Length: 478
Image 1 (cartoon, rainbow, N blue to C red):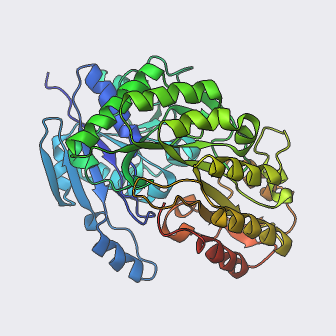
Image 2 (image 1 turned 180 degrees about the vertical axis):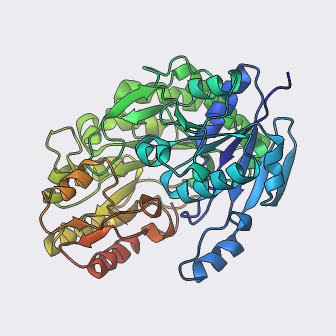
Image 3 (image 1 turned 45 degrees about the vertical axis):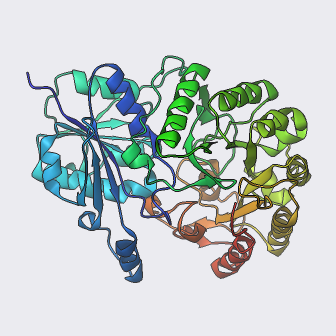
């Protein structure tokens, strides 16, 4: 029997200012997992080039068009093809699997419609965070737009089942939901093909860097987050070590003697023992610098014991969610599973890190219930972060500087805030009816997305004015 040809598709990131900043790791984990079982697969990266993007954004109510995208095909044989979008590419495959974040869903639905029309015998699969958090929507897509398989949780076991078992044509999508209790059995790090990696342009403290993760899930309870209180599952240090070896190898193949890595999960720096182990892996693999995320209360709790191993192995920037300078808003967020967190801890965490020579990337939000006093308190905090001196230089000899990021809070479907607002528990805030969550996002084009509110305490224009002021405090480099 002829073996099935498998194509993993990474969709365009139309909502980002630059598509080639971070890998979307899901397809790469699954590709390496199948390769471990002796099953080859290809990658398709869809992206919108800069001129096409500018042209689209210049048109009012522009509709996304797949045929305006570019295809980067990376075959398991090593062959690389870059070409305008062409449907003939899909005729070579039996299984086409899409990894989809919610802002990519519109393109995912366009592609599934096209595949169903032109290649009805191709098996289509959707996974990723959109399938997880908007499962009901995906299950109930119109027949012409639907997928054969929906994978809302871990993809490793379902993709192997899809690839190795006979597939009967069906009239209804099949949900394959599987979640490992722990990730110790995952030993294959994500693929990192050089023709793709060389396109990514991200720096940490003046050094080119790639990114990875140490875990899935998050133990914290932020009421604005779809992933709040998800089971924290860590990859083994053996797997992380293999991944760091591969990342270092990629950097060196690209001619870099100095290189960095960013850990993109929420739990990179959680306690001194964990940070010490991670720091040793960084040192062993020759990284010049690295970046990870932590939490203000952890920095206050552990102080130097959590940050010194990080700094001594080149760590120069940490990310922290310092969402607000308003105690009222911070209490509503409920970051610590019901335990009190104080705004003063945000200030102290920044001071502790900066004194050790570590810059802070602070992520903040504007909330729809906020009054002038709340805005004033958060802008005061952001100004402090932006102006507080960092005791150190980056790898280009420039003074390290803190950075701030201000975005509008969107109460995504399934979040506690969405439920609270829907029940009228937050005074002065109402959501629009029939929200299309594919047009809402926290990161990307000026930190803006759709406006989900029918009613807010202050006007949209007032909040946007404050957002613009806050983002103007960002440094020219970081």
